[in-house]
Length: 495
RNA sequence: GAGCCGCUAGCUCAGCUGGUAGAGCACCUGACUUUUAAUCAGGUGGUCGUGGGUUCGACCCCCGCGCGGCUCACCA
Image (cartoon, rainbow, N blue to C red; front, side):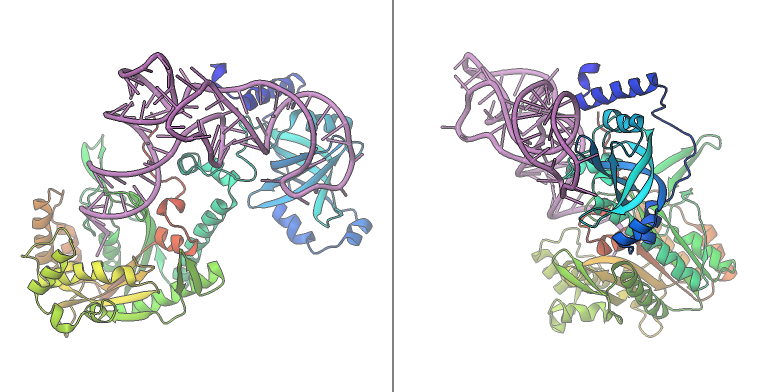
């Protein structure tokens, strides 16, 4: 067993033992009243050398030692707490001999220590703590990754995210921005008088989207349940109940393929606004996302891969069919029949098409194929064919299309919104059709009779929107893969 | 699910047409009291993802398996 562990681990285990023998607890759990490094830097980063020569500023703090530069009778090291680091300097003669010995003989890079000392500026003018007292709080047994290259191995970064976060500041920044993004959105919605709610994740009848669900089971009730694929149907029940503006930021689960853009569990924002239309939501989303970009990145111009994304409002708005003319350069007469669409799609080897597909379905497929990848700047696409939108309200003037938009950025779908269908009889018809196709595909579905009943109770005119939080964070952090913005993406267990 | 690529020291990576495994960092020993990837000298550390095969000989060639990445498919 001992042969398996590396030499660093061996050495540190010995130090651990010796510390215990000396009566020093290497996992000291006593309360340490510490100042945060962030606060120290905020308070004193503007003070110059003379200030510290004339004022003795004593600070006590703690954190992980991330690097040590040893000079025999003195050492520099960097202490990190959260997102901030400060340089420290320990010198023989300044600290007690026992503290100096503790530091040089027993403390390693990676250990968590407390220090007390006073601030000064080095000859390169760096704000530094001259240590007067120190102690170990947590002995780290495993070595840190390489100090210059960090941890690169993608698999290890995902499996041992804690090491990734210690080693890679970019990773820390991504998840900080993720938290700030969610915070901003929450504040934005709260300021708009939205009520944050939580709806069931385990559902007996998963609805609101068309993906395959994960199965689970409740033992005591002997009840098969599914992990939700969307919160939509519950949120609208709440609008029926009088919560005119509700939102939920939460996890959805879809039992589908994994890709650079798909993780089996992912975070969605869904919000519903009564007495509003999808057009109102376009304005609302435009304001939210442009302000979000400014808040997180300090600019409307976001670099993403080789693209520049311009979040300056207003965002481009285009009807689905017009985008085929304008973006994909089709002439109206080229795409005016199902047959022509079918021929174009099959010539491009688009699979899963059938001659029985409706004009609207084929139009949407052609859009996915020819237009979506080209929508780089934020673009709202409207006037979706009714076939592709079972929960959306038909347009009053043109019943072929629904009152819906999708938002595309960087060639991918970021948001989906529509004026909600609130006619219970129309909804029932569409559910029936949906159930039939799902059963054909072998998917677990039942009519959601209670949802129909809710609509019979009366859903006010309402518009709702879903936005993929992970995908937004990808854009704002220039992350290529969704796994870079999910702390613990799903991986197969190692055997 | 298919194709391609990767897996070598704790970390980052070399390793040629097959000849028996290397560097830098980390670690250990020594020197060094203002460094910034500190520096200098010496040293420890490997079941080369895994199981088979070919061969006098395999990190290298062949087959299976595992995990990961990318592309496609599935899927919003």
